Each structure stands twice: as C-alpha cells, then as structure tokens.
Length: 372
Image (cartoon, rainbow, N blue to C red):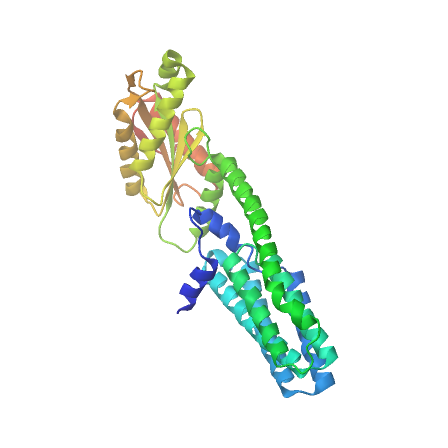
C-alpha cells in the first residue's frame, strides 16, 4: 500500500464532505510549536531516564530514532509555517507519515519498558501509554480513523509488555482497556470539533458570497485578484478584469418588483457562469453589477469572453414564471500588467471602460485605453 493510499484511508473524506471541509480538517494536523516542544522534552526525557537507570542499549536506539523523527517534524512544521502547505499538498501526507512512525517507535519503547518488570519502568511505561492515548484522543479528533488506530496501537504495545512482564500488578488489568475509553472520548471530541469547523466554514462562505446568486462577493474578488497579481510575477500569462452592468434592469425591477428583479439576477448569474472558463471567477459586486476575473488571459482572450458574456444575456430571461424579459450587458475591460498591477487601479480602469460602453450604444465591450 502506497503512502498516498494509506493517507487517504486514515484521513479520508467522509460521506458528503466538501473539499473545503476536508481542507479545514487537514489544517488541524500540524502540531503547535508549544506541543512540539513538550513532545520533544517528554520523549527525550523518557529515553535518557531509561538509559541512565538501566543502561539498556535499546534506549540509545529509542533516543536516536526519536530525535530523527522530531527533527523531521520540525522541518515539516517550518515549511508549513512558511506557507508551503498551499503549494505542496503532499506536506500533510509527510506529516501524517512521520507522526505514525513516531508512534510506532514509542509503542515499541513502551513494550520494552514494561517487559523489564522494574516497578519504576512499569510506572513510566504505563504513564507513556495512557498519557499518549489522552493526547491522541484530543490531538487527532479531526481524524477518527487515524486516532483509533493509534489508540489501539498504544494499547496493544502496553498489553504485549505486560504479558511478558515478570510483575503484572493492577496496571496490567486497567491499561489494556484504556483504548476503548479513549476512543469514546475521541468520538465526542470529533463531533464537537466538526460542529465548530462546519460552523466556521459556513460563516466564511457566507461572508465571501452573495446570498442571492451564490456568486463570490467583493471581498472574495479582492482576495482572489490580489493572489492572481502576486502570482503573476515571473509568469507569461496576464490577468483580465471585466466589469459588467445590465442594460435595462431598472424597468424590469420597477415592473415586476424586487422578486422579479431577483429572478432576473439569478438567471443572469447562471448564464455568466456558463459563459466563462472553469478557471475564471464571476462575482456580484452589488445591484446589477458583476465583475469577472480571467487568469492567464490576454487581450484576445478577454475580448472573446466579453463577447460570449454579452451574447449569453441577450436571450429572454424567465422572471419567476410570470414573464420573459430581455436585458443587455455592457462590459469594460482592463488588463494586467498592461494597464497596471494595483487592485484598485485595475478595477477603476475596468469601471471607466464600462461606463464608456454605457454612454455609447450599450450591449458592447470597451477596452481601457492608457491614453484615455
């Protein structure tokens, strides 16, 4: 089984889960710096404690393996902190893999500790097993499959150690049952966390989308345009900004009321989405005004899509089954880097070009001129 398939199995998307929700779960995978420091301290302290008291050679292997894995976790955390997670999705796979291997090493160490039979080592091994189960139940609440697997791994390690230990005691009876109790806690934490993540994602979506048409709003428009302009450096493709305004919307709104106007706006929004490419972004910025962002587009691409947008709106629109109405569409175009690289400047240029179209024959497109 490949690492990718294993990752998909233990972290995989739930039934009906959106890509955004899965991404939100994955963002909980990296440890905080504080937790990472605490993990390094306790795992290294345990290894050195065993080495100092028992002189066992396997303790050296434990210390070295733990140090190597902790170093890998620090490197991955640093890359994630610098924003590489958005550029390399495999980073999450690497994090999950390193964490699983770390728990495997820890499980082997727990078994070895409990097999010694020394009272101090029994206490330390039990503390490590039960303590890390508590961490898993909390830390991996977003990944119940992975969390359950780690819980039973630690439980199996403790059980194996007690079976071969010369001195069992009461801990040998209580510890093997701990994974079951912690899995119930894991499940509860998962439900609480998913409710919080879902609410956050819904609020984020509402804050960045128009509730009437479902299109991105001005906030998401500026965020996406800023990202496109930033990514444009070093690339050959340009970015086109198209400002759109309906011709004849007010008479429809006056005659059929706001309900009819809403039907018309939803119909226009649906047609605009079908007239652009998959990589393009159609936004509603207010009233009967829209903005379309075209990444990797030059002058010819922008003009071609503008003509498609205009043509898509010419056909009659159904306003709630009461009537069929006709409206037009005027378009203003600005290009980056040809006309500039500033967000407000590009939007202003496209808006000026739009009103040049509105002052003319309407239902046409106008390209911003640097000489204007």
